[in-house]
Image (cartoon, one colour):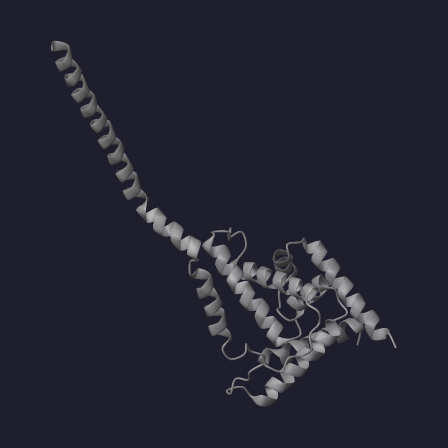
Length: 139
Length: 90
């Protein structure tokens, strides 16, 4: 999401959706619970990314006093850099790249999370990398 | 170094750097609050559950009412028959 407040909104909504689905007995256990939760979060993030207009970075993130201030500041900068870098990608390509490179999921797991074939995952990864490379080569 | 390696290294660096990010204070409480609100039944749901609890009592009451009505009708019929018989004898 590139913004911690938006990311927390998405995760919060995902938990509520998961609770609702469990209560209604809609979780069919065909995939693992982790994959299922990933799917809810990723779909929520993609929808949010598509529907929301880009908001200015909010400064209402509360800092846990136990955190190392320098590490937190570096993390915020890294998140900002990541968001700016991946902003050129469509949400589905961005999602597969984040799931692979930041979350460490393999293609089969990503395919389950995204509800697509492994071939489609591979194709999105190639496209994402091509887009990023082309963007880098632009003056 | 190829573009591919360069990209992977940058992703790895950003992944490591963002590991320090944690949910803001009170995030868990907000999530639990949303779930609790979701779990609490609404007005219609409460009414439905209350009504469902009363359903067996209502069914029993209806059955008793039908039995009473049938018996009452028989009593009235018997009394009417007796009355007509008396009138006939006279």
